[in-house]
Length: 180
Image 1 (cartoon, rainbow, N blue to C red):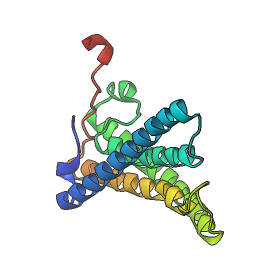
Image 2: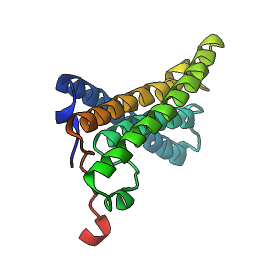
Image 3: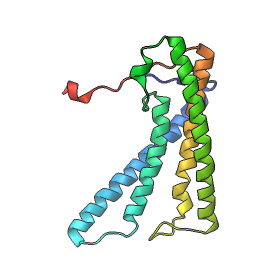
Image 4: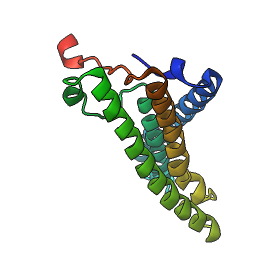
């Protein structure tokens, strides 16, 4: 699996961002598994469930999703039109990548701006996750933070293209069905 970390201005920054991404994904995934699994067993045994369980599981999934997006952009395994792009020369692919980066920046700016306003409203109205004393802002802040991490990865991608003149190597996930 190819990453673009070796072509970033700061490999130390890359290591820090990767560590934070991996830690948040692990914590979110663990929370999701423990909560959903535990609540399933609890419902089976007692017929009841914790009222906040589905809400917290949902927000753990939100944290996981946005940081997984940044992770996949970093490893060049995000959704893209690779079959289409592989037909072009490396220079044209690099042009498409620059266009992609600019589109990512546009969408990221819109998402970060609008989601930050939502977080501010959650703080202003002191909203809580249903059934807990956990501020709803702690859950909703995943969106602007996750997108900020993705924008960091997009900046790394753009830096790679600018400094090497080439698009990052297109990677393909192994086809699990043909390997069985």
